[in-house]
Length: 562
Image 1 (cartoon, rainbow, N blue to C red):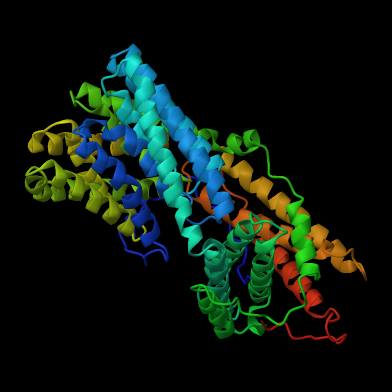
Image 2 (cartoon, rainbow, N blue to C red):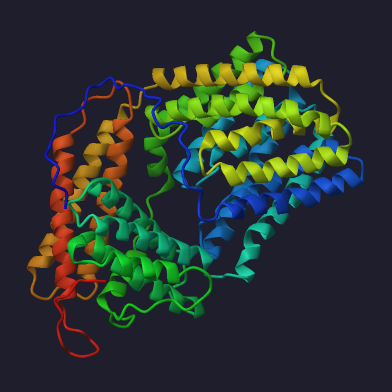
């Protein structure tokens, strides 16, 4: 439970800081998976085109191949669907770009269409929670296709190449299921346990307990979303139920940190690595109230797409306007590839202006460093086309391996890779490429960020109000059930998880709104009070659940220690 006291709302104008923007983080636990997948998806099509002497067609195969970068954290059934939608979305964007390019060569029209595509791709990726790399890869490919010489007769063949590479990328993304079919859900559960252990180690009052608690609930919520994407019956259901009980223990630790053992939680998380047996918690069998609560959650339908798109309108407008203005500015400067400025702007836009500022700094630093790396690599790559392809593959691996440390570090590899790809169709003077890329990076970052400043997200404050109201309602429902001597089976557990989800959403919404400029003062006092009362209710629900009769022995236990 938070010990924070309510504070007045922040000033409408917020300072943009450089502190920590370039700091390196620990790499993702699965950093090598997208890195290897990208190489496995890109290499065969490019090497085949090289063998046939048609490396100039690589842009179309890369459109499909780069879809392998998505959905690595999702269970394989959900990953199959997500990858299919990403491939279809990629093909749709490329089709629009190719048709437009075949009908006009007016650069202003092309930039406008590219900006509109970028806004649509941003909104759909965020609403669908596709995850990294989000809309950036889609926008990069569709924007480049807009400026590729094209005729209507060529479009079916080029789309067929992209589709074939997309099918291959789908197979690459699904291939790990043959080795570790339960890998994603085991990792998600382990992350929830580790996050809960970090909070339990603070005993709920130590240094950093508030941020550790927020991170813990976010990890637990992500784990539930992962597990609920799995089948509830059949062979995989047994694994799902065993992992559910571990996530329940993580929830117990978050609600009662002083009564939890962090080392035991970490031991369970460690045991989930690899393909060994899932550790047993000693809880009741899978027909217990916890899993009845899960079944109740399964019946809940997700919000319609239009409702998820509504709050994203300011971000979509920022993206469309920023990309258009960046492209127009590049054209005004006489740069031959305005889509570089457009893509730079598209890559900036995050959940709020503060995060957008950080991404702008990271993008500029990474791209300029990448230009210098290109100067060192270009002489080697120009020795032979096969070396050009191999250098691109190495940079592709490096980009995905490093980007989880910090975005700018990944950009150091992305930039020279993008420059080398432009040479697949023929030699380009390195000096001109470097100059154009550097200028477009600065133009795109500057103009794109200014557009984000101009387009304010005044809905952010309303979303915080709505999130507070939703959290209060969820707490009231859980409190009513706690007041009943014998609530319906699974009802209390479903209410508890609904409250945990509402509190997680409240914290994420408040953090996003706090990073906006020129917004009205946020209801900080209501947020703090909603969090305090909500977490107290969660703790009471956990103790009520821990004190229930044990279905195996008929005895009771008051110990909530995991």
